[in-house]
Image 1: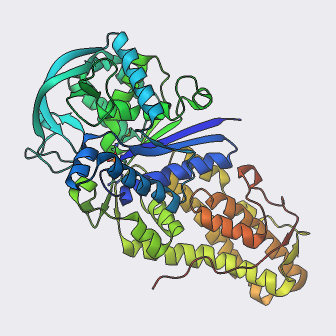
Image 2 (image 1 turned 180 degrees about the horizontal axis):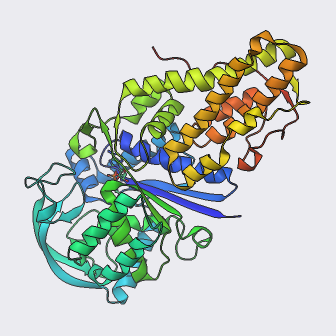
Image 3 (image 1 turned 90 degrees about the vertical axis):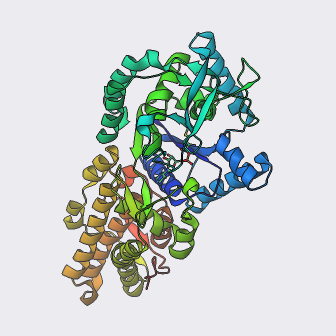
Length: 490
Ligand code: ME8
């Protein structure tokens, strides 16, 4: 059995989750569920980034105790995962003791290798990014990501010899499939090639919040150094069963704003500490809402819960994946969500299920035998194409291809004028359509799992895997017609 280990970024808990967080978790969930369909042994890790200074600052602002504040917020992120139907295996918190232990351990390994040394840092720190910025990165003196002026900092700090890894990193990033999509790979490569790669400050002095360095009690570990380690601590590095089974990660899914940390800093940390490198860093684009950036620091957070409660979780999942080509930025529009729900989910998928189940129920009492097979529908399903889209992480194309097949099934119903037929003739068509629906239900499972489950219940079949996506697998049906799948939105 092949293993598949996928992670998302771990979210800062300085505020409520926004639609960008939801988007990332949905994308990862689609990939995790797809690999489950392939029969792989999947481990899916997500969680929260608790140790950031900005979490502490937000707690202070709210007049709350830091730990209580972040616990409350972390719960909201975990609830979001449940609301979105995210099938994660573990939800990590970086305040967990096992994570703290592993962070210290890895810091010490790198220190003992003499790749962490003491120095002093002078620079511009953006708390939003939890990173020092260069003058070149600023726009009108502000961090373009957070629209804030960075603070001038001069302090003692421990440094990681990142500069030493420049050539090795260029080679790694140039290698096939390490960093995807191509545009995101080129961005990092040109930065590495054109700019000097400096050593990285990996500690902060005199901070109350964060994990103490194992070498100096006055310093806490720089939050990015600790946060990245979640990907191995979450598997119980170095001796845990899960670590041995699942590491290296197959996919680290992240948003474009944190590409540098994952493609440059993280691999250098891993090489330095003698840990195997992940296979793929997969970068998605950013969502905007009505053309505006979203983000906790910017204040115009858009709650995913709003969309889930108003439209339904599968409607939101479907819309986000179908609408935004993977890797590109996208604007969230309620209008388009409504249109896609009505035109594609209700009119195409919902309608097909309802038509086939109604005829089966009305004329055959739900009982259909598959005595006669006709190839017509089978030829319309291009499974290879769907698989190849997902292998290339083109999830939008995969779902679109699945819906092409759904639309072909509806055309078939119309062409054969099923409502005018009866007896054996009708039974033959319905059998082929029921088999088609069973296969559709498998294929949509990663994208809209609740709907897939509802279709299975109506077909009265068990959840299938990819290997079951072939016709004539089930010889007879005894269906249980249910409620319509999607209510139209006015
Ligand atoms: O960056 N659209 O946490 P975070 C889509 N703690 N994705 C977005 C987005 C948007 N508008 N805004 C943010 C952090 N994201 C760190 C990660 S990982 C070891 C540490 C993405 O809460 C963002 O790029 O700011 C990241 O992948 C994730 O949401 C969490 O962002």
